Length: 237
Length: 237
Image (cartoon, rainbow over all chains, first blue to last red):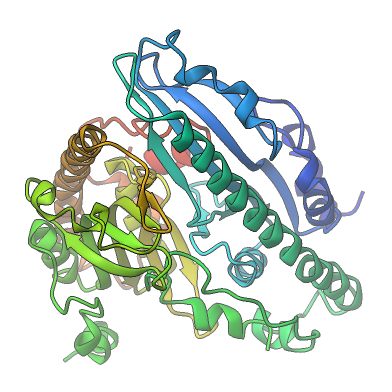
């Protein structure tokens, strides 16, 4: 093992920290792609999910659904069995990528922004650990019951399910959008491996790369909460 | 003006980029505190709000309410006048702070995490502009109508309003929680001004500071999406 891989090897046994114990099927290709680059490895992930939680019972998870179509047959949370405050949620794709250097993290961040994950951001820890969190603005959080009393009609639940499924589909489109850009990361890594030692700034290095296809980055919540968006997009030009 | 202030002066006319054109009342003290430190200035902010949007009409904003108690008398979005897909939303506090150096941004990030804003993160732009985005996990997004047809009862709207008001109150508590920690930033700045030139790492410098009161950082969505939390908390110890 050379030095390039040493930092990664140290953490390989931490690769999957999610409760579920494995990477969700819809994102295994993205996670594998990132983990095949020596600059990155993922530490936790969720492909996106529809969940029913019961507010009173310590917000514990009653249902976890990565599947688009199964929800209707599992709506136990709205039945009389619930004594608490049931909440229907859609939570989009989330991914944490540990990065070797700050410019690597910036690159993952720009991939995320380009793919439509506008709430993404970096974390630099006390020990110098650099992490990019990929997050979306795309959510849904709907209270369904209050102290066991269901406050909505069955028709509304069906409507919600349809909305949540649409959001899951959009979520998957964004994940797919990130794949070709991740491939550019991988490609860039291969072509620049020789010049790694005395590399110029990340921006000069990235300029050599192919420009990705233009993506719809503004399909978020419409607010201007990412003032750095243009700068991030420029990373690849 | 010395060099320390030059970078800040260049951007002072950009201080308030929000559509509204002014800083929301509930956060003027936090915004002022940050802007009184030479390392930081805020570029956009929202104290948190309850809004009704109409999905079909380009997701434009129909109502903006920073006030906790006025919502019920403004629920126009659920009337027959809406032809679209009305959505009731609570959006928590969001703040963008431009920072002079990376360790300044880390510090703002740790203040945010300590105050309960767990989806906060850094952005480093192509031009080297460093920004901390303060974001919460605390939201609410409830579809109310479909193609003009209202799908929920009036009782449910009242329930939603109550939930949204509770979330606004929790949101304000988190904002208040950040004030004493921001004061430590300010205090730290004054005491370390002399040693600024050849300062040690941010962590050594911060260790000299007072430890803030322990805060409930896990009062979020309960998921483990911030693996760096412990590291961030340690920044102040």
